[in-house]
Amino acid sequence: MQAYLRIMRELNEGEKLPLQAKQIVDIITAGQDVAGAHPDGMAKEAVIEELAKVITTRQPVERVLAFYCGTLGPKGTGLICVTKVGPTKAEVAAEKKAAADKAAADKPAATVVGATA
Image (cartoon, rainbow, N blue to C red):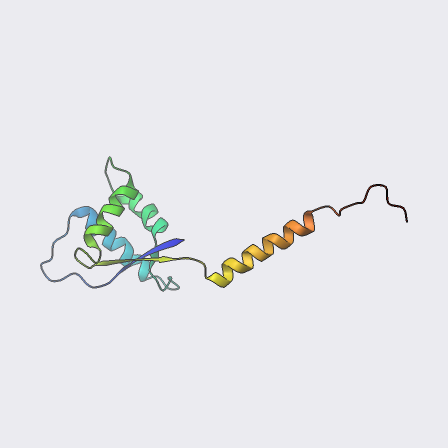
């Protein structure tokens, strides 16, 4: 399951954010503005990669992002929306069928011992 982050609203005039939160908002905003960006926002892994380049902390970057997703999310300021996207049921069923077909094709044919033709 893939998680995507996107900005839900603009910062209000005079609204202040901690430096790390501002860096997260800037990264997500820049990721959304790229041509061909995913409609659900920027992938969480991509945000973590970019954040690791600019953030200075002793905490793991994933932990910092998780904290600010809560603070900046719908229960906080409402700046960020986290959307989790997974494969559809049809895609999962097709993958299972393909795996079962491959397993059946790889299985050696059964031979009967003692049978004569």
